[in-house]
Image (cartoon, rainbow, N blue to C red; front, side, top):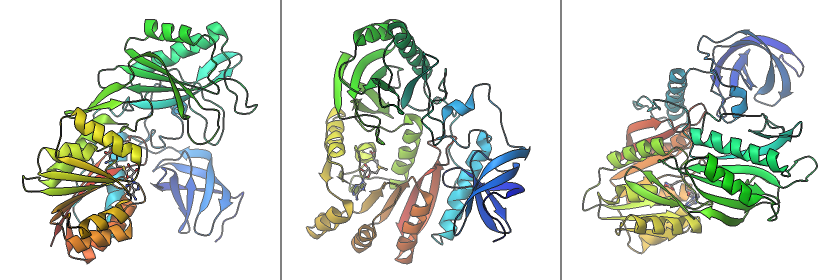
Length: 450
Ligand SMILES: C[S@@+](CC[C@H](N)C(=O)[O-])C[C@H]1O[C@@H](n2cnc3c(N)ncnc32)[C@H](O)[C@@H]1O
C-alpha cells in the first residue's frame, strides 16, 4: 500500500462505516475518517495503518457535500452518538436502506425487495432517556456530552435529541449547583460529588429526574427537588443514584427516592409500562411502536398460533402480539427483564403469555424436546445476532413463519443465509429508523417455509 502514517491525501468520501465514520478509498484501500460525510472532498491526514484499512482525521474540507445541512443549534454539543447529523435526513434514510440491501446480498446471498426505510417526520427530540454529564467551567456549572475520546464536556443549553422539558431540567440543575456552590465530580482529580443527570420522560411529558452522585451525602438536595418542582412543570419523580465508579455504567446500584412517584408510566401503542429508574425501556417509543407493529403484521397471528418470542426482553413484542394468538412463550437471559415482562403482562391484563429465564440457545431446544412446540417464531436478538445452535433447533422444529427483528443488518444477513439454505425464503424486509442521525438501522423481516 502506497500510504503511510502522516501522509496527507485528497479524496472524496463515498460511504459510511457501521459507526458512521466517512469512508474514502485510496487506490482501493479504505481509509476511515471521523466527522466526514458522503460527498465531502477532504484532505485527510493518515493517523493509523491497519492490515485492511487506515484511520485518518480531516485536515481540511476542500469541497463540502451537496447533501450537507446546517442547523441553527450547536451540533457539536450533541456528542459522538449522531455522526450523520450534518447529512440530510432523506439521504441518511437512503444510505440506511442501501446498507440493508448490500449486507443481505453480500453476507447473506439474499436478494429481496427491501422497503424504503420508515423514518421520522421530525427526527429530533425523540429520546425518552438521557444521561447528561455535569461539570464546571470557570467556576460555573455546565451540562453537556463528552467530547469524543475525552472527558471534557461540551456545554449544551439545548439537547435537541430530548424533549424540551429536559432543557429546563438541565438549566435548573445548573442553577442549583451555582446557587448552593454544589460540589461537582472531576474525572481527572476523582474528587467531587455530582456526576450526571438522568432524565426519563414519558408520552405525556412527565419526567423522572435521577441525580447521579459519588456518595449518598449530598448537601442541599431537597433545595434541588424544590427548584425542579417549582421551575420544571412535569417533574413527577426525583431519585438520587449513588455511583462511586468511573466505569462504563452511568448509574450505580443504589437508588434513593427523593420525591414523588416511584415509577413513570409510559406507553408503546396501547400497552402500558411502569418504568423504575433502573428499568430497560426502548429509547424511541414512537418508532419502536412502528417496528413492533410491522412485526405483528408479519406474524399474521391467529387463534391457533403458538408463538415463541426468543430474546423477549421486557416482553414488549410478546405483549404486542398476544391478543392475536393462542399463546406466546418468551425466553430471555436477563432475570430482571423476565420479571419486568411478567409485571408488564399483569399490568396490561394479558394472560396468554409466559416468560422463561435462560439462554435461548439452551432453553429453546430443551423445551422443544419436552414437546413444547410452536408454529411461529419471533426473533429479536442483540447486535451479535442468533446463536448457531438456536437456528439449528429452529430448523429442526420447522415453524411455518419466522419474524426476525434485527438491530444489525450484517448479523441478520448471516442468520438468514442459514435459514435460506435450509428450506426458508425471505419474503419481506422493512427497515425502521429508530435512531435518526446515527448509523443504526433496525429491520423487521418475514421468513416463510418455501
Ligand atoms: C434487542 S433486545 C430484545 C428486546 C425485546 N424484544 C423487548 O421488547 O424488550 C435483545 C434481548 O436479548 C437478551 N439476550 C441476549 N442474549 C440472549 C440469549 N443468549 N438468550 C436469550 N436472551 C438473550 C437481552 O438481554 C435483551 O433483552
